[in-house]
Length: 145
Image 1 (cartoon, rainbow, N blue to C red):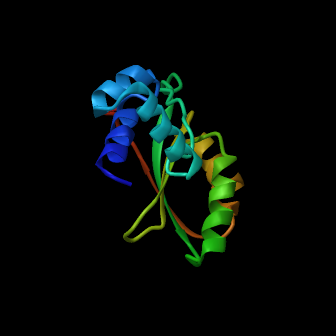
Image 2 (image 1 turned 135 degrees about the horizontal axis):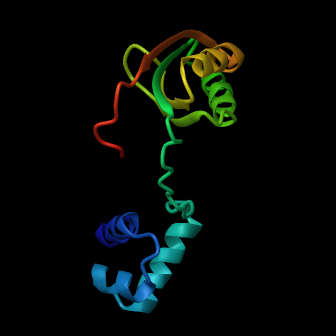
């Protein structure tokens, strides 16, 4: 990968729907040369795909809970099994693998404390490999991002 490939990726990160002609102009290539490089980046797996980021407004009157999850073990298998399970939980709006004291940081949206208790009991505590759950309720959102 050279500087032009990095420029193509940088531009596509800013706007994944950028037309090839605009992309070519931004990186200093002809449209045909730019398209060849783009296709090569896709074929070799550097660009694995394109996606749409949707801003999901919080459910009306939803309560945000920040949940720290610690697993029993941090093997690839334990991480994969936990991640597969957490993807199936619709209340989890974001999940990050972390460094530090906990393994995962989740942003969860529920109706109220009783709804979180249900989620904790029926879903989070039953996920594979969970050793510890620490939860904090958000008082208010200052910046949504």
